[in-house]
Image (cartoon, rainbow, N blue to C red; front, top):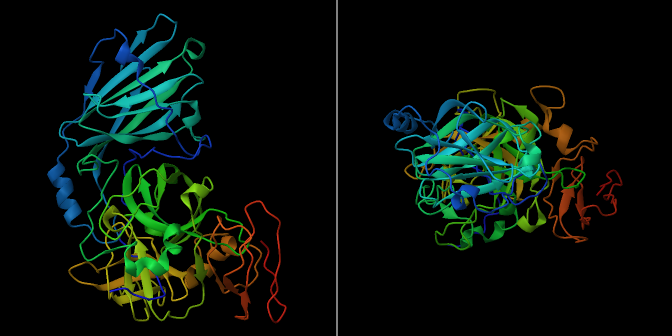
Length: 499
């Protein structure tokens, strides 16, 4: 059935358990220290006369059965765990072995084994690659090689993460040129023993893990939501698919990459990766692209009572990703219906519908602050699952009214999900400048609602925003990025929109 419901929401689960940082680094932005792009190439040892097996360290056994039993008891607002963290301390000076080369350079290698792992990911508490140095990672049969990582991949805080490598053994190979001898730093603090199948021939994948009652966002019922879906992204921490969230517009319409998600999803933002456009190209299940990503973010505002977190991405979202900055409505008035766009169980993007108004409620009906959440009593089509946490709740005008906190809904029972209210988050926060209003309306215009904005449409006439007296502003012109500002006034002359 093709639906014409005009509202969308997000569903979720995930409370913040510590998530291992063994990360996805298949990024396509090029700003140094903010995102990573490997330079490609082949590890030097593949073509040199170097011992076939480098110095090897075997990690203690991981009792996967214990982790799986814990996962089975996880609530909907807990993280979607796929691996076990193993604390280690491996450095260039204390681990591995060095091989001197005829050009005056040298190669350092270390092989790490964790028996039974489906993949291994690494977290670095120190990562400084000098100019000309290269780092590769690969498995024993060389079927999965990542790198070269270079000085362009250094992060400002001196830490880093690398994508999980398939198999239960991973070798690091670091080449240091003569001019940079002794200046590189590499310290591995955590190895992620991945016990869920990330791959199946695909890169970092939980594709197909969500329930069969979910609707792919590109099915006919998702047609009215093709703009809004472009703002929704999946959050990965250390390679784990933990939550969902959305880009949000601000009153200046200046394309600042603000991103709304759930407070309980928060972890180490330096190891967060935001994956856009991970969706099937059509209605049938088909895996989506995993390379449209942005790494790292800064926390701007948060509040536990409404479980929101507003963060700012470290880089602008590339226009080639075709992003969309979703609008919002801060009025504490129930929508006529709701729709969810989210990544249940870390799967490709889905959409769910509730044809009835949400109910103002406490979280789970008996926890937290009165009237802090919108409750979806029952989904009419689709549901939410773990991984949906933080996804946006939209009203009938396609504007965000909250983000998913948690609930009980699933494909076996479509009842009860709770979203922290945008209206409460607007005026409350955990500290100074920690309210949504401080960032989304920095000039204190009194705006009650704001429509979404498309950075790829320059000079387009269209869209509607609303001022503090609920006067509509029609025919708003969207200025190009870096373009000339324009202002408009509404019918009562009280509001000026700066672009």
